[in-house]
Amino acid sequence: MQIFMNQCKIEILRMFRNPYFIIWSLFMPIVFYFIFTKVVNTEVPDKALWDAHFLMSVATFSVMGSAIMTLGIRMVQERSEGWTNFMKVTPLSGMAYFTAKMIGQSVVHAFSIVVIFIAGVLLNGVSLSAFEWIMSGLWILLGSLPFLGIGVLIGTMKRVDTASGVSNILYILLAITGGMWMPMEVLPKTIQTIGAWLPAYNYGNGAWEIIRGQAPELKNILILAGYLLVFMVLSTYIRRKQEAV
Image (cartoon, rainbow, N blue to C red; front, side, top):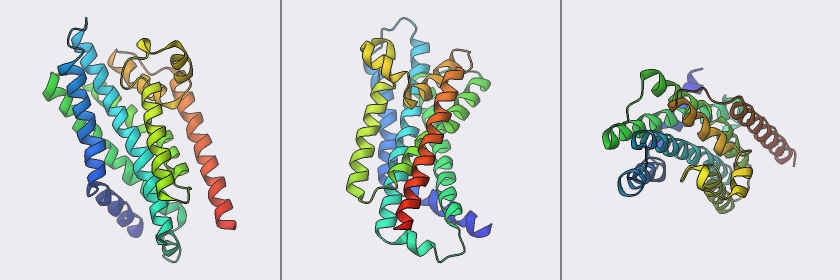
């Protein structure tokens, strides 16, 4: 257990020491939030609701990106450098190794959520009840699991540059089709239809429903759970095939 806890601690420290994480998971989402609430979209009918809505958008955008890109690329890099093989001769099991990564990533996600929520309060005075703050934060944290699954799946790739390119493209496409940069209602109908069945929209919609005093839709929960199952099964299958070679 002590070895496992130390591995979790190492994963957390590595994340906070990564300038890429600081820039893209914290700095850029806050910049986007400032632009889309202070520079543009300042004449919306219900400014307070828009400020809260877009705060949830940038929080989900931040956590989703961190889960997809940071975890997957780091796993590919560690395997290409032989670190994964080295871990096999330690008392830490493979399952514990990957679990520590996901726990460490989740702790960092919780930190990101708190920082972005504070930015929303300081920049726009976003006011939600304690229940809404807590529930939206928990939803964003737990709803990130399918994207951690994507990260693990990307982590099965053989080259760092391939994993980086795929994760970047996937991240942008999911953000666009998920309505995280602009409301789904203003997007083309085709994108709305496709996006409704993708994980990003269902992730964001759960948070948007909470700040409107509603519970996340059952469809949102089922779709996210389904994607998590698919990604984990695929990554497990691919990894076992790789180990058998």
